[in-house]
Length: 452
Image (cartoon, rainbow, N blue to C red):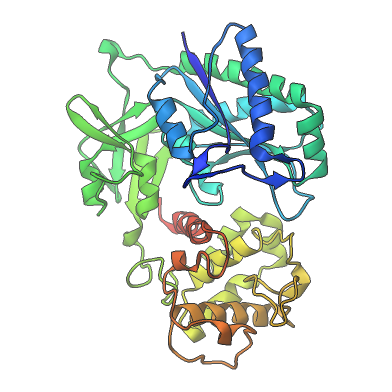
């Protein structure tokens, strides 16, 4: 009998401290999700489904290990979370799935539709690949041995969503239970069968050429022979972020995991071909792509098209930003790709909200020199971009500014203390994931400009 695993996000111990998730007066994200999870478990058991609730005192890594010790290919796993954002107007439910997996996207749509049917007053934010999550990947979607999804039930920072989560808790739970029941049945019917019980295979295109071996499909995910990683310059033998299996005396790795190692991964459904291309085949800036000082790899048109894909409305309002970033970054020797992606993180993809507003022209979230809560303001978009570029140079270089200083906090930075993007975490922003969020946009940007 197929099993259903359900985990309530947060609540366990991370680095020896209880992780409550988002904290509100009188409640926490963990507390709200646990209550919903318990109702879902009870409902599914009443329908004779085999359901396992993940213990609430486990860390995120322990949660994955707990499920992997018990799950089988025909099982499914869901983790439920609630979002929070500085702009209280942001609301709605969404489901994340592992990128480049059309079957899992269909499963995510099934789950989200079931929730919205039960709670029509809850807006749908759609289903999203985990590459569109803030850090560019979600371990819960990638590192489990059975099909898995991550759901954001709503936003605790939004009064309407909070009221739904607390006052319509049973309806929310019924919607999730409906979706899990349908998903579990769908996965059972999706398990591939081939003559002799072998796993289905697919072709591999490597950097534009045909690779002589084939890959295999496991739980609707593409796995490739580990030797390909060596050809792409990736050491996949010991990395904890790359899933490995042994099949027919060959070690295979999950193809999508290579995205974190500067590899573009695409799927051609018509020909059942996986396309792999090393991003180093594109003329990226010399050295590592996470260096703040350097030459960007994109042109103005590519940045415009990427902005269009991230926020179509902003592409019209801020159509001159790609040109401004390329020009201002070139003057100071800063990588314009890094600066542009940092802007997307700081401005919520130019949706703004929180302490920033469009009138400030503050695309880097630079603080006010007087300590004002609203941050600095600049007379034009160009000056705002220039200030961000100068602030990046302060962190990443010892060289003097070329242009007159407009960054109000340039003199407060210890020069050259953070030459790499991840070193901005805890410095430019208190968010420990800040650098990873910038790099997640960088990976999406470079995937968008690679040839098919």
